[in-house]
Amino acid sequence: MRAIIIAVSITLSVGLFGCATTTPIPSSSVVPAASGITKLTTDANNNTIVELKVQHLAPPQNLDPPKSVYVVWVETSDNQKFNLGQLKLDKNLNGELTGTTPFKEFRLIVTAEDFAAITQPSTSVILTTEVLSAK
Image (cartoon, rainbow, N blue to C red; front, top):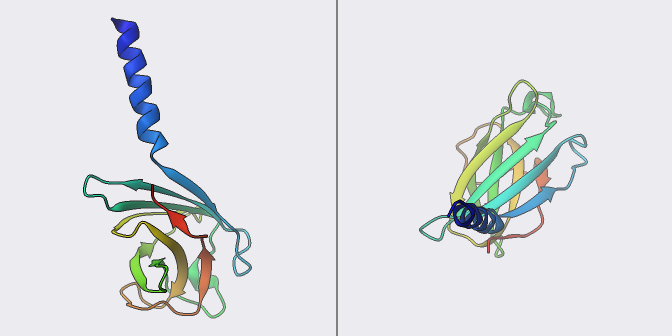
């Protein structure tokens, strides 16, 4: 009986983690030391859960010109952009953001901004992903 429970647990774990799509983020010429990874999963309502983790991202105040915050955007195939939220950095220059979007295919864009609550991104693009697709 114990062997059956272990086998079922392993199968469920592989199934749950197998549903996630993980994609590295290419480095940027603006902040070349920065790197990151995205993980996409789907919730019970069939929305896409986006998990973004970045490392070695310079504080936005150190950019030229200086900015106040980083904002993560969802960009759809028809170039609509939606503010997913502010990406805050810890003391080790690492940041994490988890957000939800109804879109299944999109790019993520990280921009440096003066304010977090904006409706359109500036031209200060720091990182971008390739087109991501939630399965």
